[in-house]
Amino acid sequence: MGLSEFYGPPTDKALAIKLLHEAIELGVEHFDTAEIYGFQSANETLLGDAFTGKRDGLFIATKFGPTRD
Image (cartoon, rainbow, N blue to C red):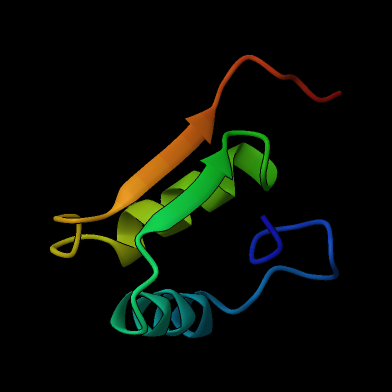
């Protein structure tokens, strides 16, 4: 969530992907996201881009239904 919105401007995409890859290398397997974490599902899109080819062994939780206006 914090990579895409809410805690200042969105993190540069390349840096965010690098961070997510480093998390995987350190053994993180569970990632949480939601369509409202960032404008136009930015966080889900970021995780999708970061995890291309790295999905095996990862658990990705998402929430749906909440809306923003």
